[in-house]
Length: 489
Ligand code: GLC
Image (cartoon, rainbow, N blue to C red; front, side, top):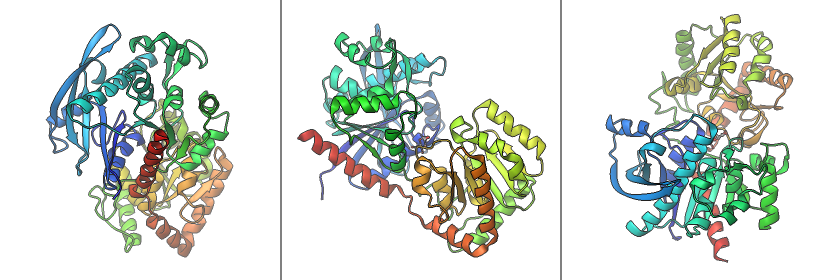
C-alpha cells in the first residue's frame, strides 16, 4: 500500500455548506473520492454566517464543534480567527471552517477591492491555520491544494512570509476570474518591500492580479479539463493578462510543463436517476425510455407546454454561457417546433432578452429566473436535449449530469465540453460562437431523435459514460505524487 498523503483542500465554497457554482460541487465531492483512494484529504473554507445559520437549524443533520482559535496581524489590527470542525456529509472527510465576524461572515460584494482584501485575509488565515494544525493537532499537510483566485496568495504567503514552504497545487476552475485590484492589498499583508517589487512586475504597476501571482508561486498549476489547458497555453487572446503570466512563469522558472488538465467528475450519490428523490419518476438504463417519457409528460403538463422535442438550458445567466447565441437564433429554433426551457439566475440584460423571447413565443418558451435544485433535477430527467452554447467552458458539469440522465447535450466545441462529449456518439458539438452551426446542429439532433434507433444508441452510450469522481481523483493523486517527487529532488 502506498504512503497516505495529507492534503489540505482550500476553497471559498463547498457544497452543501455553501455553493454558488461548479467550484462548490468540486470542493464538496473531490475530497470524498480522494479519501476513497487512501489520501488523507481535509477541507477548509470560510465560516460564513449563512453556514452558521444552517448548522443552527440542523439542515445538514450534522454538528460542528469549535476546536480552537489563533490571531493574525492584518493591516493595523490583530484579528482573532475561530476554528470549527465538522465532516462532509456522508463521509469521514474533515472540513474546517475559519470564522472572523468582520472579514469572513459574508462575501463582500461592494467594490472589487473589498473582495480582494477579504480573500487576502482568508489566505493569511489559512496559512496561519496550517501552523496551528501542525502544532496543535500534529497534522501537517504534505500538499496544500488551492482553488481559484480566492486562494491564490497562499503559495506566496507560505513560502515568503511565514517560511513554511509546503508544496502547493493551484487548480483554476475559470481563468476569467482573476482577483484584480489595487496593489495596496499587499500593505494589509505586510509584505516586505523587496517582495512587493516582484509583484509589481505585472502590468500596470498599481494593480495586482492575484491569480497571476498564484500561477507564478504555486508548485504546479492545473485546470479542469485537458482541452481547456491547451486553449489557455496556446491562445494569447484568452482571458486578458493570463497568457503573459504563463509565459513569465516559463521564462523565470524554466519549466514548460507546469500546467495539467484534469477533467472534473460528478457526484454519483447525488446524480443518480435511479435514486433521485427530486424527480417525478425514477429510472435507469433498463427503462429509460419509459422513465423519461413519463417524467417529460409531468413536466410539460406543469409548465403548460405541448408535447414536442424539449431542450433545456440550466445554469448561470452569464455572458460566458452563450445565451446571446440562443437569443439571436431564437426564431429559427422555435420554427423547428420545439420547447425551450431556461433555468437560472444572473445578468439582468440576459434575463430581459429571454423574457422578451418568451413573450413572443408563449407556446414554446418557459423561463425560470432563479436557481432551483429541484427543478434542475426534473429538467435533467425530463428533457430530450440540453443546450450548452458556452463561448468558453473550463469543464462544465451539466453536460455530464445530463448524459447520465439520458439527456443528450448540444454543446459548443470548446474546453471541457469537447473533452466530455463525443460528437454524434454521446451528444452533438457545434462550432463555438456560430449561430449558423448551432441551428444546423439542433436540426441534426432532431433528425436523429426521429430516427429512433440511432437516438436510442446515443442515449445509452451517454448514460454509460463514466463521469465518476474516482477516475479524476486518481489523476489528482498521481499529480500529488509528482509534486512531492519534484520537490524532493
Ligand atoms: C467553473 C467553470 C466550469 C467548471 C466549474 C468546476 O464554474 O466555469 O466550467 O465546471 O468551475 O470546475
